[in-house]
Image (cartoon, rainbow, N blue to C red):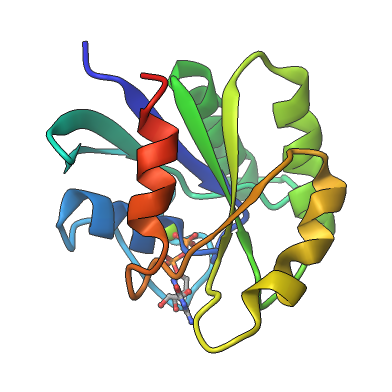
Length: 162
Ligand code: GDP
Ligand code: MG
């Protein structure tokens, strides 16, 4: 069995962009419309000889009803079956209540979680992402999934315990 890495977070934080980068595909739906990827989506990825499965999710809005509830359910299932969770937040949008809700859920689980502040391109990543320390998930891994910045460093750490 290959290790499973799940990408979770609010809609629009860049999960599918990271998925596509990790799998070298354009398969996952990436769009300006929050929440377009409704289902869990699996891809095979490779980083420095290590193979793993990456799971993209639609996202958790924290205000679940109808389709949002389905999306959140998929995210919870993805977290469940993952060996490692990459919890993405948006350094440009800043800390939102939904981020807090997801963090609260993740802290209750016995899972390895990496807190990832995406979209640090063209902004001061250190100061823009500092507020995410309040999520209580430790170190903030800064990346720009769209450009690849910080992704190797993140994956090196995320995959090393697997
Ligand atoms: P998802 O809903 O979490 O899957 O988010 P997407 O991957 O669909 O991305 C949402 C939006 O954020 C899209 O417009 C992306 O182009 C944009 N985006 C993703 N990664 C980055 C990044 O590293 N920097 C910037 N500036 N925008 C990004
Ligand atoms: Mg998506």
